[in-house]
Length: 207
Ligand code: ADP
Ligand code: MG
Ligand code: MG
Image (cartoon, rainbow, N blue to C red):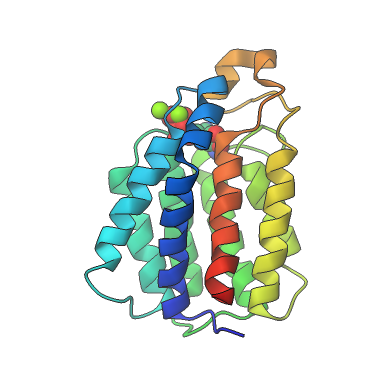
């Protein structure tokens, strides 16, 4: 069992970069179907920049790592996803506070803060076919486990199911909403990238 401490947070962000580089083309294809085709590139560029910052030295706390991610994503990722993920990581950093490691309730608090930040910024509701449809079930699932790693695992699995469940939905927020009913039948790219980011948190905990 690994502690969800500063070193874990750094591993999480590096794992995000690895997975999002790997999934770059897939996320581009998803966004090409219902958006402008840049989501894979946006996420890859943003997390590459996060890794470049991490290479300057290890983070001193979970909060510091999450704040570094927030600031970098806000400055390097344009479009909708940059400010949304930037706000998510910034709120998550504040929620992590001065804890040196996260247990289950702290994981829930951090993920809830991230989701609330995305909702405050983007005003999407569950069912609007956005990343909120991955974050919201993740937050709910993280509430039960006392153990931090178990809370992350529950959150990641719920996010994956939430992302898959965006397929039949009609988009009501973001670029995909311009397509109206034609957005149905495709996964939401941001919900899928959210599921990768949360799965990366689990991978970083078990590695
Ligand atoms: P853009 O649409 O500006 O090109 P991206 O392609 O990087 O930005 O990100 C698109 C993703 O952003 C969507 O798949 C969706 O998950 C998310 N998104 C867009 N608008 C909102 C919103 N108002 N609230 C929550 N998420 C949103
Ligand atoms: Mg796009
Ligand atoms: Mg764009």
